[in-house]
Structure formats: structure tokens, C-alpha cells
Amino acid sequence: MSEAGPTICLVAGEESGDQLGSELMKALNGRLGSNLRYCGVGGERMTALGLTSFFDMTDVSVMGLSAVLARLPLIVRRVYQTVDAVVAQDPSVLVIIDSPDFTHSVAKRVRKRAPHIPIIGYVSPSVWAWRPGRAKRMSAYVDELLALLPFEPAVHKRLGGPRTHYVGHPLSENLEQLRPSSGERNALGADNRVLLVLPGSRGSEIKRLLSDFGDTVGLVKDKMPDVEVLLPAVPHLEDRIREGVSGWRFQPEIVTGLQAKNAAFRRAHAALAASGTVSLELALSGVPMVVAYRVDWFFRRLKELNRVLKLANIETFVLPNIILGKKTIPEFLDEEVEARVLADQLLPLLDDSPERNAQLSELERLDDLMRLPDGHSQRDAAADVVIAAMRK
Image (cartoon, rainbow, N blue to C red; front, side, top):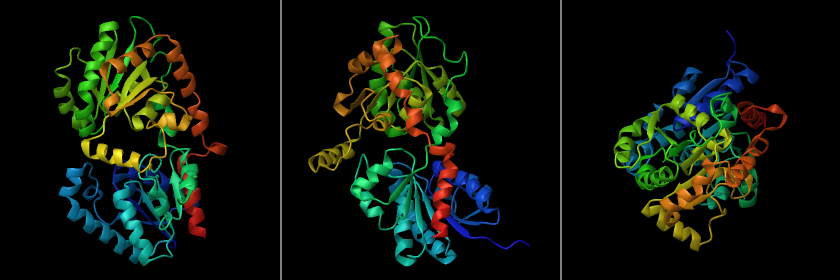
């Protein structure tokens, strides 16, 4: 019987964290052997690879203020349960993965009770866009931070955050799913234009943007009647989206599921999108776009306070623009979101125009800016940092 290896605790709080955690576990197994012991909080992927989860991850995997408040007593209990279990296991390293409201609450308490345990944060909170003071506070309980975006190490250095390592973005590992093969994205022509409409992946985003996007599509179709409009819908919001678009002057084709969404990306010539990771997906797919966003009334008030206190540290909210270091992609926030303005920006992107060609030229730079050195994969780059922390 082989001797048990080191214990590694990984704590995730949602599906995307389970995906990152499972890939990290594969890399660690490949480098350190399969006799590692894993404990923490994870989903199906991580438990399939041998993680003993302290409880079902769905207990803390909630989104939206009302959903969090409804489950808050349970989430608080799970935080303290996780802290107790981590301290009892006394692992060689603790890796907290995204979901900062949950995972950082765990990390702070573990640091107080067991300061000898190295703590690694996987995925940086967006301190570059909101509440930059979090960076310095994190340095008290996070020893190393694994960043998905190439500009984040410099941001944390400037803000006094933890030592930060760029380990690559998962999207860069799956470019074949986003980029068209021969014949998938037809040559742009008067009778061959495909427009993607992406109003968001959360109910609140859809509620605030769907009407504006419908008016914009109507104006685009007035000018280009033959344009094909595709709307990839998150499955659990499909009914709400169908109801919301029923009043549009022109009906989009709604597609659901990851495969259908990726196929739509590979066909598209331009996109109208809500701000978020989807803008980076579109950029890596080579789809020029216009981005819009409306924040809710509560965060609008906080945004005003943020402006007054000069807490914001960035002049753009679109990820590809931040990575490129310039406002390549037109972006509109709150009162700037007007259908006619959005349509005027979209129409040139559906033609062989200087605006379209300029945006496509800039988007081609993303590969070089996001590429890891020495051909590393994301999971191997993350594993390098974890192993170094364990050996210290």
C-alpha cells in the first residue's frame, strides 16, 4: 500500500471554480503523483478526481442579492464549517477558487487560526474595476494570487495586493471551440450577415438590456433587412428571454446550450453584447462588437460614490479593451445606452468598413498579449505556483 502524500485543500463555490479546480488537480497529480489527498469544497469534477468535499457545493453556489439573503444563514454556517475542517486537516496548502464572498471569508479565518498554512487565491477579484482597496486587504491572508488576465499582476503591485502570477485564461485553452473552421463563417456580404445579440447571462442583466437591444435590432434590420439575428440564451433563462423578445419588431433566432452558442460565435460577423466575459469570448473568436451595460439602482448609487471618492482605477469596463490598453470596442454605460447610438455603431461592423477592419486588427493582438511563456498550459502554470508554495 503506497504511503499517503501531502494534503491539499481546495475550496470552490460555483461551477466555474469546480472546472478550474479539477484542471489544477490533474496537473498536480501529473507532477506530484496520484497519492495526494484532496479535501475542501468542490463540485462533480473535483470529487470525481478524489476531492473529499465537506458538503455539497450547491449550498453556497447562489447568485443575486435576493438569493444570497435567502440562504445567508446556511452560507454562514458553511463558512465556519469549512474553516473548522481546513484547520483540522492541516493541509500543505489551501487554494481558494473564485467566489470571493465565500472563499475569502474562509481564507481570512483560516489565516487567523492557522497562520502557518500557505493560502493561494485562484482568480483575482476585479479590483481594477471596483473596490480597489480589496487588493491590499487580501495581502494579509493570500500569499500568492493566480490571475486569469495579463494586466492583473501589475494592478495588484500598484495597489499593494498579494504577489500575483498570470496563469492564463481558460478561454485561451479552448480556442478551437470559438474560432471558425473553413466554411463556418461565410464571407461578409449584403445577403450574408450574421449578428449575435447577447443581453447577459443573469436575469437582472436581461431585464435591464433586452428592451434596448430589441430597439437596436429593429433599427439595424431597417437598414439591413437580410441580416440574420441569433440570440444565444442561457437555458435557465430561455423562457424569460422568449417572453421578452416577443414584443420586438423583428424576432431573433434563439439558440440554447453551449454547443449551439459556440456554433453561433463561429458564424457571426458582429455582435451586440452585455459587458462581461462574453466580450472576451467574442474578441478571441474574431467577432467585432459593441458593448453596453446598465447597472441596477443600488450599484448606480455606489458607482456615483465610487466616482466621488476616486476609487475607480480604470477608464474602460470591457475586458478586451483593458487587455489591449485602448478603447478598441465601443462601450456604453447606463444613460449612454440608446438604441440609435448602438445601431449607428453596429452598422459599420456589418460591412467591410474601416471601423470593422480596425477592430479586427486590434483583436488579433489578443493572442500575443494572453499567451503564456514557454508554451505553458493554464493548469500547469497554476500548478507551478501551488507546488512552490508547498515546498516553502
